[in-house]
Amino acid sequence: MSRTALDLTHDEWRAYRTRWPWDERAAAARWTRAWSRTRLVAQAMRERFGATKVVVSGSLVNRDRFSPFSDIDLAVRGIPAVLYYRAVAAALDTAADVEIDVVDADSCGPALREVIEREGIEV
Image 1 (cartoon, rainbow, N blue to C red):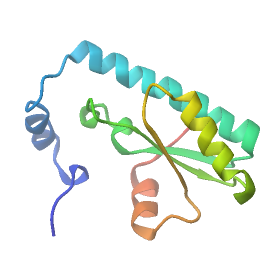
Image 2: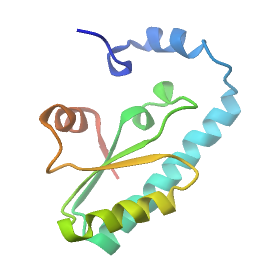
Image 3: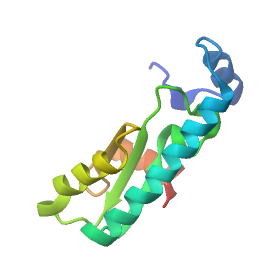
C-alpha cells in the first residue's frame, strides 16, 4: 500500500518540504490567515446553517504539515440536507483567498470519518 502525507513522520515531512522554495514568514502568515477563515466559516456554519459540530482536519491542524498547497479541510454535522450546498457556497465565499473543502461528517466514508475523529480539532 502506498503512503500519503498523513503517514510521514515529522522528520520525513521536513525533508519533503525542503523540495520547494518556502518563505517561512509567508507560510506563517498564510497558516494564520487560514485559521482565521476557518473560525469565520465555523461560526457561519453554526449560526446560519445550524451545524452542531464543525471540525478542521488535515494539514491545518499541524503547522509542520501546512504547505503552500494546503487547503482548509472542514467536516460539519447537523446541517440540514436542503441547506448543505448553500453552506458550502458560504464557506467558499468566506474563505475565498484559501481553498476550502467541506464534507458532511455524517455521510462521508468510514476512512475519512476515522481521520476526522482521530486528528480533527473542533472549532
